[in-house]
Amino acid sequence: MAAAIDESAEKDPNRCAMLIIFEQLGCRILDLGGTITVNKKAAEAAEGNSFVIRSKDVLVVRKVYKTVAIYGVKHDAIRGARGRLLRRCLLKIGDGNALVRLVNGKPCPREQLSARIAAVCQASPTTLFKSRVNVLRQAGDITGIKALAATRGTNMETIVKYYVGEK
Image 1 (cartoon, rainbow, N blue to C red):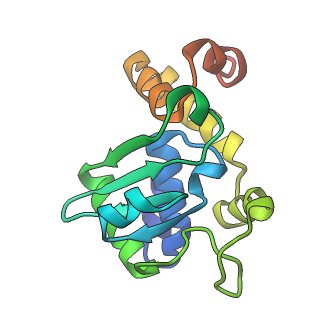
Image 2: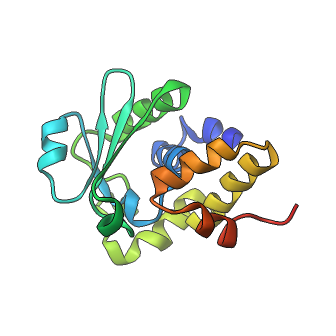
């Protein structure tokens, strides 16, 4: 996934941003339905998800996701090289724009998110998550899998049962 992210950055900032968010947070489809902003207060006041561009990283504020009733509003920062690349991609997409957009540039309706994300990323969100989990498993990075579970809002039992591939 890393090479695909680097290669897509300049050509398609939406694809690049989505792949980084999937890679770093292990998120689901609904998590990407949000607006890009440079204003954290606006993100906190918004009803939906937001991607806050900060000086050195990106804060992902998730209010609409599958397990919100269990885990509440989630705030996850994406830092380091991936955070800087994500920041550049989001700046190209533009403040106030939706991350997932239709071909005509309009925000993607909730019921079309899955198909649009799969088309842009060239893989389903489930496939991307399984891939990330198995890269971490093969590296023996149990801490990484636990961190992914925490940012996704999923317990480890569910990840092992449904997402860990065969050795």
